[in-house]
Amino acid sequence: MTHAITFVISALCILAICYRFYGIFFVRKVLQADDSQVTPSHALSDGKNYVPTNRWVNFGQHFAAIAAAGPLVGPVLAAQYGYLPSFLWLLIGCVIGGAVHDTVVLFASMKYQGKSLSEVAKAELGPVAGWCTGLAMLFIITITMAGLSMVVVHALERNPWGTFAVFMTIPISMVVGLYHKYTGDLKNSSIVGFIAVLACVFFGPYIQGTVFGDWLTLHETTISLALPIYAFFATALPVWLLLTPRGYISSFMKIGVFGALVIGVVFINPEIKFPALTQFIHGGGPVLGGPVWPFISITIACGAISGFHAFIGSGTTPKLVDKWSDILPVAFGAMLAECVVGVMALIAATALHPADYFAINSSPAAFATLGMNVIDLPQLSQEIGLDLYGRTGGAVTLAVGMSYIFTKVSWFSSLASYFFQFVVMFEAVFILTAVDSGTRVSRYLIQDFFGEFYAPLKRLDWLPGAIGASVLACVMWGYLLMSGDIGSVWALFGVSNQLMASVGLIIGTTIILRLSQKRRYALTCLIPLAYLFVTVQYAGYWMIKNVYFNPVAKGYNIFNGCISIIMLALGIIILISAMRKWKELLAKPASQRAQEAIESAAEQAG
Image (cartoon, rainbow, N blue to C red):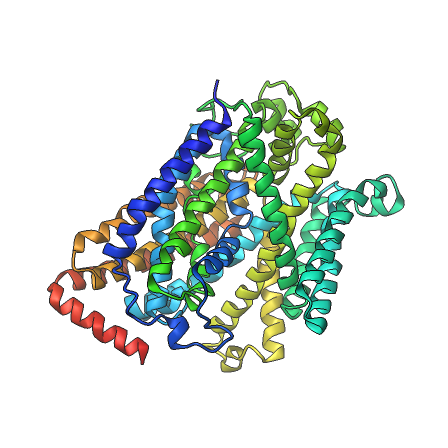
């Protein structure tokens, strides 16, 4: 019999040891972080974008930015294979890959005064690699929006209570934003906003069975159409009116949900009902069609290694780092913390009986072929007050798993429905916040990319360009959202996301070869890069052959297959450009490389 506390203690001990030894070694020895050098936050301090920030405050904003719904949903979907593959990949992938990736990307961006990864790639690898990186980033952010939005779709379909609670966060956040802007009273506006959000959860049951409730009982197609339309208007609004206040309010929800999960795991210590390995490790599962490798590594991205973190590590965060040594807690530490979130999500999923898990995450027709009989799901459906069968996407499974853990407390059954909807709202709000930000980033990338051909598009304040780019961004990921099931779209997201992580490790390898006195230190990036690049290429090939170009597959979609081919080709071009650069660097003596590094640093500072 395996209990949750075993996983928690093991993970915390392993991650603490790795932080204390490998993290310090990587930052001090490999990257040679030197606090005597000026960071971009000081060199370019403007009180707006470049602001020296306390390391723990910076850790908090960086962690909140990278740890959205990814570390919660990925482990839930990957539980199909059993608890062992997911647990091992979370720990190994995080320490060997994710923490190294996030740290080296942040370091590289800081070396180039906080510039984006595409600009760093252009400087390190040449214009072709830089252009390919920029195009890959556009594809990846677009696919990310579709993958995350699909989780919201399946959490809110046929769920008027959850739809009402999530919808009400929009006017509540706007009121909070307006009140704070014109009064400056952050404390009271935050308290009122958070209480109002909770009130919507508790008011939700009263709309069920009413005309209003029937109106909010939406089909997945309706939600899929509404989300891109919402994203367009959310992107057009000033950030202080919706994006910032809702993100701020949802941070309290995130702390509350994660704190509740930790308390439940530690004090209730639920039994893990899943086996170490299931019969689906060779493929053919109802949640993910592919085999455990490579799908475990593309399904669990956030929590192990995620290319999406490169957008944050080469975006806001490098402009806030006070001292070079701060990258240890801010980047390395935040990635380890996200791994803990992923482990907690895995526990919540595997605490369910496997039959209950597959009944939630499979269509009724697919579940019928498994020959399984549900155990606790009928009672959970009754306590939660919602039909839980066939709600794919991961979000509902996580909410059910957390609610199930707390049903071990005798008095909790009367609150199970409220807690379930609170967790659903928490996941949906966090995803929508990421969709708001991601759509805005996609708009910027579109304007920057096409601005090479039509100069006015480069101006972010040019209204026609901003509107056109926003519409194009929403149409692109909206089409992907409508084009497939969670298995195919999440796999597309996983491949693109891990391709971005490969690019980050490629640039990291180049930076280390150029700056480090010991060339063998490049293995810290080369080893995870070798595994990840091969995994991504094979996963992409498997999806193209067996799903996207297979007319009988559920996720058959020529467009998605073409996108996959383009992304994989971009990854190969970037790697070839990097290998040429590596050959050039390896041919130079250490003294010459060191001198060039000094000259490059001086040029960037100038």
